[in-house]
Image (tube, rainbow, N blue to C red; front, side):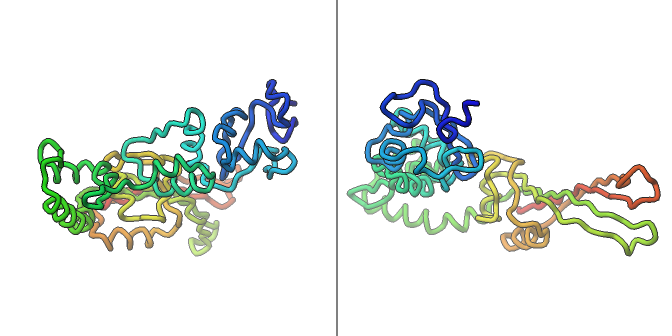
Length: 293
């Protein structure tokens, strides 16, 4: 098969002078990408240019299926690849990963992309334009109904920005809303007594609610891989936690002012085999609703 060619490269008539095929398959942090060889070498002197222009296929690391392997953030690599295709930076609205994407750009030695991701500083007052542009509420506060800051005096602008940043954390931390925490669990009950119950580990704790609230409460313990580009004011039901202890989730919610207002649970029972005398397996799904006024 073609997959065996040149370490998972797909030979579709690439450059005759290059040992690499035209179509190349990558494994970046567990995420699989398929792209053209000329895309990877679009920026001279970048890391990918050196890898796929100055080296041979045998010199590069591969995974178990022969795909070229890069131990980097697989989800952010999509923006690296988009940039390499036409050298234009296009990011979703309310993109929260600019700092991490800049780190990836630095790693791949994409200097122009790194500069575009760097915070822009005003010469007059040394205030980051990126911060004021990325937060609609902050822009509205600074510029009034029109959202413009051109008519503000420099001293007034600095004091307003300082006051806004000083009070933003407290306002953000007290934003009202709901978060639903859910989990699916199962356990086996022996034939003789309930004392024989064998509990199984909770596989995953899910988080549903507004993106900004979920990130505020759970921070780095929130796994956003299934919905990475969700704007902060949108809702999602695809987040889950990196730990499996409900009490830990409850503590984090309680620390920032949430209280439980409702819960519900469903359960089913089945036999481990067709023999009714065998142990029963109980499966349940439970949701807890938390609120902050």
